Length: 348
Ligand SMILES: Nc1ncnc2c1ncn2[C@@H]1O[C@H](COP(=O)(O)OP(=O)(O)OP(=O)(O)O)[C@@H](O)[C@H]1O
Ligand SMILES: [Mg+2]
Image 1 (cartoon, rainbow, N blue to C red):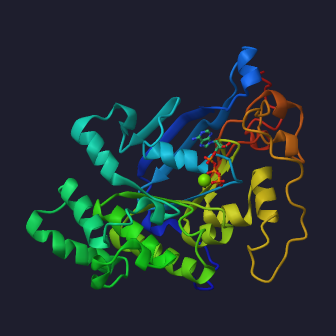
Image 2: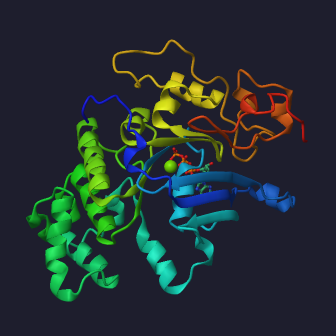
């Protein structure tokens, strides 16, 4: 990655919403001890996503950040339909995704592709890269048979791999090259949206930069919309036009990258940035990290989920969950920014 610290401006994006997530909720049944089962105790649920609202604009890179366990991967997996949501809606170009069937559903499944952290585990070790791509292109009839070999070469060029790579097996490649293969496989389906979940977190820093820069180039060349899920705030800042911050299964703030990193509004975002030692190279923050323990997703606090760790929490925060409301440059879910004043009306 270059020493670029300026943030991306949403110049290439349009105001056009490609994906609209609203009220998305997903729970998982928690494990239960034998004793609890024998006693007939109700099974607890992991609240992985709670009433998530998020709109993704066509052509943008939207970063998704938040502490481990806040629901980033669950959101990504729900969007690619690896998980069914309990409730809520996902609209793609205005159409409800859960209602899609037949050809429209297959088109959605092609249009939204996920690239995984470890493509090695998702690549068949006995299939060469050429065979993998040939299979994807053939099954989905992306090209007539006579054009498949040329398309494989084109895809390899796109991701910066030599044509000879087609004849080799996954284990013959380095981690960064395997990520390129994973990207080529996703691109074979000509998606509109790429979801990268911790795409580079398993790679060495120098290799990370190459893969991230490839993603930047591909996005501009192919006009992709990218959801970039990552822990590394510096990478997110480098890549994203806008950033969504999640806390315990909720989106608590969304803002354009410059606003989010220079004037974060939500106390959680402020704490997250203050706790990140890597944001400005060579400087270490004197600010304390977020105090207190992350509550269990089995037992999410009432009202605002962050109130138990929030230095600015007040009475209303315990009784009323703040809605995600528009503010200059983004949206925030915090009573401090209630247009009617922090006290507002207390609705238990
Ligand atoms: N398949 C599952 N079964 C049960 N619980 C799950 C499952 N997947 C996720 N969870 C739980 O849902 C919550 C959200 O998990 P998720 O993996 O989405 O978080 P994340 O933000 O991606 O975390 P990380 O940064 O560590 O990748 C966690 O409490 C997790 O334990
Ligand atoms: Mg995850």
